[in-house]
Image (cartoon, rainbow, N blue to C red):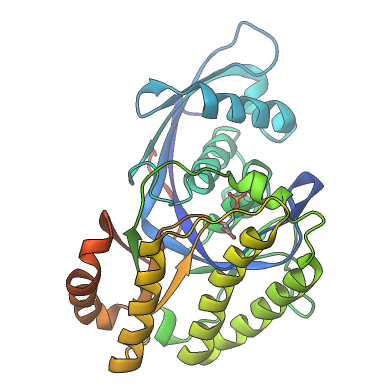
Length: 337
Ligand code: DP6
């Protein structure tokens, strides 16, 4: 075993959204995502001699001690120590860095827990052939959406009737993908970079007793089933219809929960409107999705990159703080030998 293990794990953008969970990070519905390429967390895990009992962790984010996230990781490790034998014998130091700026709405908990699980399993000498599968199971326990970051391309999380190996416990790769969707781009429009007012965890909790919960969970499962087919057939209209509907359904849940809240900003609505008009006018298959925040993910095939970039710059530059250009990625990567 080496004294340092380094892993990179990408973030992912959900096309069908996970929103609502049961105990032990079991989702209320299936979700499906695209793994990103440039937005990743890199974790360096160093092993040291251990003097005390229990989990001994020092956690640094961008070279600074980060108490808040460090405590979340500490709790995660204490709860799941049995899965990471390396913790029995070693004190660990984690240095984590993100390739993307704070408060962009890119899910850093997904890429962080993904990278932490991979590094700890590697350091525990977990068999390589099953590493991503087990890391998906364990990353889920840290942050639900993290389980989908373990595979390149597209990933499905949640048990779906008729889909072999689909499970609430881990994500699986979606391998049957039409050429149309094998090279998709995601331009992230930073409409607002203020820290989130309502955490995802509080948002999930508001789905308990939500008047539309049952219908929403059914809808998301049906969307996953249709999306699997659409991805296989290369049906752009089908894909766009589901992706945009999912984004708006997610925000509709927030707006109609008992403690109602609204994360979209005027710039979000403007971008949505312009993207839809641009699609109508040009016939270019471009669409939007949203995470739990105001920023807009613009999705389009790489062959339309030039046209979409010049549209975004000329039509939307004034209503946003910046753009991050990302694209479909190949999944996590071990950086140390
Ligand atoms: C809107 O995975 O961040 O991005 O399990 O509490 O960590 P926790 O939640 P998290 O929720 C993600 C919500 C979402 C939709 C999605 O990624 O599917």
